[in-house]
Image (cartoon, rainbow, N blue to C red; front, side, top):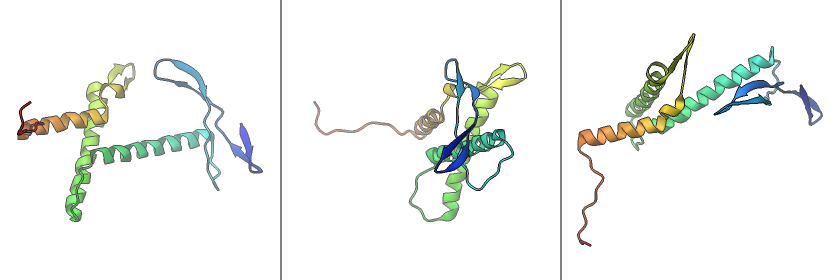
Length: 143
């Protein structure tokens, strides 16, 4: 299938069956934009975009786990990025090895069981409890 836009022919995916959150929804049509590229097939384009989306998700989660700092020390900043990457890899490992449901020939990954932010929040509570940090405020005036 192609689309004519701005006087040129643009390729689109012909559609593929996809599964939504609860049930099958039929066909989903996707449009891929590229310039100066002659891809061997639409499947190649779809897979390339899928891999790119996974990279973008990793970077987004890296920034969620990154320790905020104002230091200019590059070694310390690199250490913080390394810790964030380790936390993300632990989250991926938990999903693949602990939380995944075994299926014939594979495992069903269920991301809804433990979101990345939830894991980070749990780790924050563990560290606060270990260090004895309390969420309380001392007031001078008793009500």
